[in-house]
Image 1 (tube, helix red, strand yellow):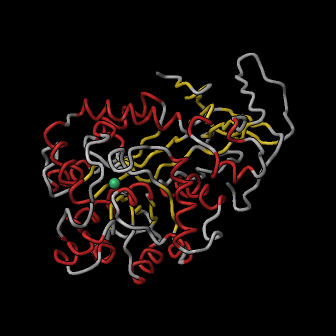
Image 2 (tube, rainbow, N blue to C red):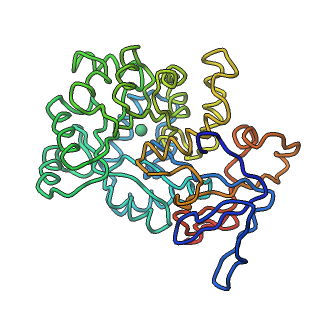
Amino acid sequence: MDDDATVIEDSSILVRDGRIASIGSDRGDPPGAGDTVIDASGCVILPGFANAHTHLAMTLFRGLADDVDLQSFLERVVGEESSTLTPDRVHHGVLDACRESLLAGTTDALDMYWFPDSAVKAGIDLGMRVHTGEAFAGFPTPERRSVEEKLDALTASGERVPWLMPHSVYALDDEQLRRIAGTAEQLGSRIHVHAAENAGEIKLVREQHGATPIEVLARTGLLTSRTVIAHAVHLTDRDIAQIAEAGATVAHCPWSNLKLASGVAPVRALLDAGVRVALGTDGAVSSNSLDMWSTLRLAAVLHKNRESNPASLGARAVLAMATRHGAEALGLRGGGILAPGHSATLQVVDLSGPHHAGLGDAWSQLVYSARPSDVRDVLVDGEIVVRDRRLCRG
Ligand SMILES: [Zn+2]
């Protein structure tokens, strides 16, 4: 997944101390007694997927709010969450999500939810990298702590925190949004937020803030090069220019957007403006699956239709979104690219199934034919976490 989309055939990858030591046809020294050898003949090895927007623990509520729009969805889900969630339940929900994700080649997820420490712990339990932090919303949450209480605690500790996650501009007022932006600056945090998801939100934000969601993010200091915006479906030309100028990333979530009838994000226009676009599944209530394979395939075909141009988003571009651009959005230096010195975070994809018969171009196979069950082995930072389609840590 480097700049030239290099394909190295008939090769081997040597992993040492969590990193890729070498890639090439020169196999170097024969394996030693303590080495593990994975024969990946007939397979493609590519970086693990980075799911750039999800709510992992929502596996607990899969099927709770199907066939409704975003506003009805939120009413049902927020009520259920605030009456039933505990740190322990979140831990169990995230364990299920990590199992589903790892078995389908996803090694990293940007997770916005309540009780984030429980999510991080579940990731550690199974060997998946869960990227998360405090989430903020003005509506009642299961944590029973106000936005101000959380910000006071973060500021008082002064510790660096990787992520701050304002839910959306419609769930917070201007003053709260500005305080979150200031705290993120102070603590070196990246920012993750929902914005411009559907037409109802645009109307609501116009009434509340007198501007578009992107304009509100910009004026409150939340639109930065460290920001990942989930959805970005309904954008003005000015919004697109502002996102590009700020260097923010858009996490495109096509399954969720189509299922909630929210619309189709202007991905081609965002890419043309120079915006980094990554891919997300969203939570298991709004898309019912954490499968990045179907997400990248849907993205590829959706934008061909949106633009009436089959070349508008090709196989290589969507694979880059699911790997390299996702890793960049998560701040993983050198992530999403297989190269010496980079983290050995990768998946071995078996292309021997009958649905791969007639194998032509590997990029096309991966995007248009592959499925989660083709993922045979997964490594995260050099540790084998999936072997022969089974989780290694249970
Ligand atoms: Zn979401």
